[in-house]
Image 1: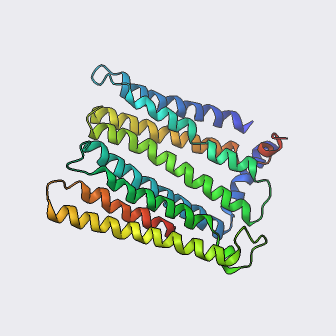
Image 2: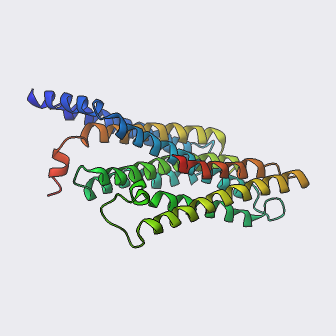
Length: 147
Length: 131
């Protein structure tokens, strides 16, 4: 009987977790869904068009760089950029800012490259209309760092 | 104790989910065993969360970052387990009916795993057993 009450108490403990923690978890879940959906859509486009004529497979570079940028941005916490964390890290606050700057540059660069590919291929050739969703999902690759 | 009923219902859920997966592969109408690759994702899905539970044993802000990374990776694995049958069906490696059965099995299995962690993973005895 006391074990039964204990499990009820644990259920109530979960509901009283503070809102900030839940917001982080929800944001991680949303970011995970967007990021992996993006990758699965480009995998789908690559599988549907295995030849290089309709879907040039070098376009994957766009997504790879966006992923690298995503990892770079998420590796740096806000505290390190503001300068109020315990450990300086190997580069310090300026290094953290430069790292974040390069990360955002790569992310925006891959976003712009994906839009260029979309318009350059879709508008000019008009025969492979799966490039549109495949490249458009790179938008989501870039948007997830907001999560 | 209350754990036995939960354990039985969770194992029933797991069996039903695996049944859907096997139906999607083994029915003579379909007869393709490619969807069994999602078993790989089923096995992988609890691992990030378990690793983060073991590695972080304090409650300050840094432990939340590890937990969030584990949640992110777990979500990715779940999305991959849904994406793989859809891609198989789009390339006509398996039929859409088999894909639907596998996705139903996915939902049941992941609900079972989630239920397992909610019921058994959230009490302190779990972490004491590590020592």
